[in-house]
Length: 166
Image (cartoon, helix red, strand yellow):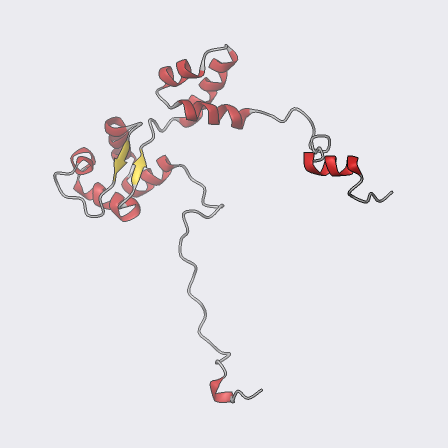
């Protein structure tokens, strides 16, 4: 080793700063409605949803008094949203009452109402209805029985290309 001790990094460094907030971290899983409420407050979030619910809205980096969002929720709230979402296009949620709507979606589907009709009556997208129904589905078989061998491996087992240990 030809490195001199003066070139070696110091071992007694200052502690690393705390990690920055990562909105995409698995533990920080909140809805867009909750993030909007946290950034601008409940009243402004309700006004935003009343004006733009179900639509895609551009959040300017530096909102001006005449922008759509500033006219809807006011300039201070628009600037607060710009700090968090500036430059993004957000699909503004239709309503903040997700839990009640999820229960109604499942109940309406149990009554054999079509996906399109559910979305229309509850003022949400068909994609959201499919998502709620998929999350509500329970697995039909226990996990131990529901692990079939994949098709390529099964084919190779039939042909004898994989040595089986007995």
